[in-house]
Length: 147
Figure (tube, rainbow, N blue to C red):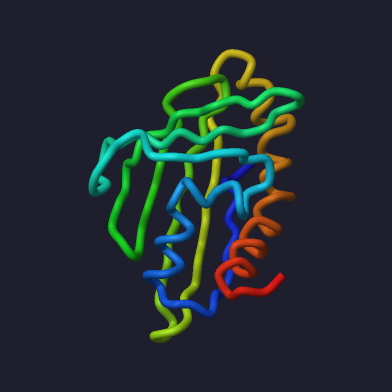
């Protein structure tokens, strides 16, 4: 199964869309299942920095660590999971359409390790295909100030 890609036009500048979509402290506002997010570094972001995202899975909160592998604000941001049985591969691209509009594209895939090798093809990719359109729509609504 190929990676999941979701794209949406947002009536905000590319810089605003990029800043919001790539700030882990906002992930819980627009991503289903995320309860917290943060960068594990202080100061300006750089390649190699770690992102900690905590998701509610079943009845437990499970943190996952990703490494920043692409960082070109306000255009590209990418992380790769480094721990756990299910490791996300996420690429965010923001393309300006005008001074006040931008196209946001998020591509997500997963690598399975251990039990994750079974879960990724059976459940995880399918769930991502259902969630991603809802997630980007929620992000758009948050940035544009609508409910």
